[in-house]
Length: 232
Image (cartoon, rainbow, N blue to C red; front, side, top):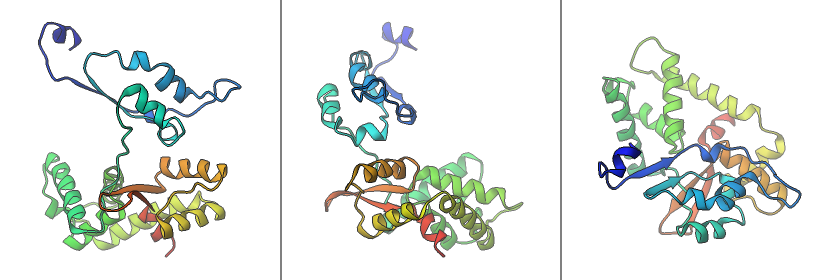
């Protein structure tokens, strides 16, 4: 593709460099330099050298760190957080229904044949927390538990209980209290270094989702809805 682009074969190119956000953070020296800072800040000249539009995914530890301002200065753009789809209202639910419908149509089916009723479809959408990957994960897990469509309420309930149990079993009592605090306040943990470290884990491991309210204070947070199921 690059060879053809040099000769005018392409225009308006956008390169998306994904998975960089999954690089584990490591400290490289005694001054606290991390591999994330070394790549995105010290290596910025290389990353910015491509003569086209580039979209990089950034590790969440770096995006939420004191380096956020330097990243904006170096790259000349705001570091954007991709919020989840708010499933508290009909608009958000309808968007997830359309996403699922397209995926099902690609597989040669129709969404109305996948679930036993619209209420069951909406239940799965709400339990995904507006995270498309979680939505597809719930759907795949439910499909693995049945031999025929449509998915019934008992199948979905078993799937939800199993996934909720998987989330709950790795949490300590202290982590559970912190997640309850996030659920009650919709605010991040930031009172101490330990809070901030735990907060990064919650965001990275999908215990907490970020949402955006354009008419309010911007970003707000809530726990993964599967955690509420784990309390039942």
